Image (cartoon, rainbow, N blue to C red):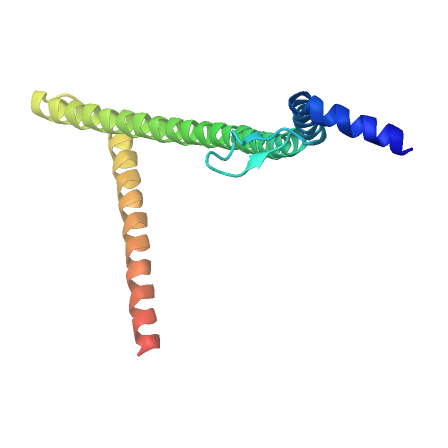
Length: 163
């Protein structure tokens, strides 16, 4: 046994550079093979380096967050579409009401102008039509006045009750 050991040590001594080079190569090779490669985390610049497995986990986490944001965005889009539709419907109702009021105003002006022209030219006036129009205007005025009076009275009662 001493003879084999002696020959081996003599070989190491004689081929020292090759043996040390081979040992360093083996150490580097095993460390490269044995260690997981790490890279900078592209999702957290300046953060710790990650392995392939950690990178996959971070990517899944980020992708899940993006999918949630996308579904929230889509839900918000549907919500916004509904709000826009409701806005358009309300706008149309308002525009229709304005057109109706303008038509009433135009009819009143035409009626008043026609009535004045009839009086000035000495023509005959349809008494029933004039009375019906006057009664309608009086009823609308009285109704609006009643609403205003009721609100004013409720306000006075509320002030007196808090005192």
